[in-house]
Length: 138
View 1 (tube, rainbow, N blue to C red):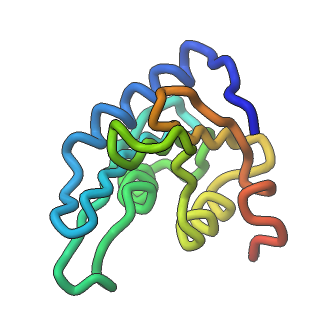
View 2: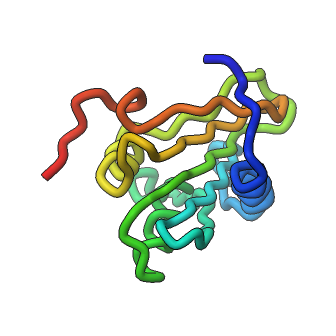
């Protein structure tokens, strides 16, 4: 997937994900992730990963951002930006994990933009159907 030019709204979402990534609590993996989710009303909701010594209790940045979206009354995910990893890491996009792909598929639609930020700052754009073909939907 090639890096894609972004609209001003998408660039603002990426910048918000990069900023909140600095607040992540990742003392075990040192893999900091920030996410910024835009709802159907254009509001932006932030989340960062929060690790825990009981690894199964860790919460992904995307899950936190989507939870904040729902808590604020949003019901549709218009776009989400995910920025993760060390700043000096390989120039590889930070994709959502499997569980977060399902969350994105459930609250998003085929036109939902998923912006995956690479360590070099470039952004790869995809959609829920390409991230999770055959996602479970009610």
